[in-house]
Length: 128
Image 1 (cartoon, rainbow, N blue to C red):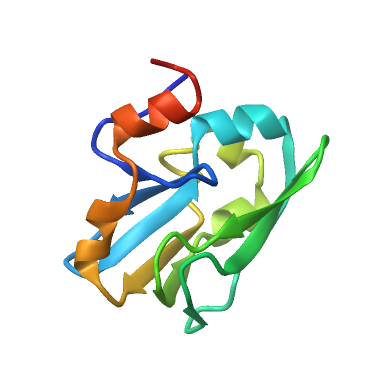
Image 2: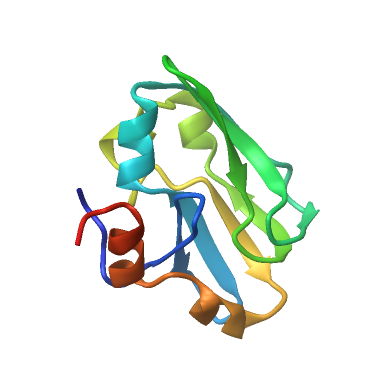
């Protein structure tokens, strides 16, 4: 299971990477995409949407199930990855790279530090 050290993680299996001083890029983890199986559909929010931490901002559908994507932090959606909408399988092949989902301009940049670090996430998924 791949759990990059430089990222932060949520209990709902999203990863968060700093993309700028007040922006983050969000996707689902390798663990999550493995649990889902083959991703066949992705729905993402509109750019400009304001989100609160924990809001559903889209969904990922696989051959096994449908899972909501949750905002890991409060802020504004400033970009969505249209490439995963047209080629959802990208999430399976590269969940931490080309398979990213949204970018958020976050209300509180320090809030990223409150998310799980790689060691905490590995413990959550039983990969210690």
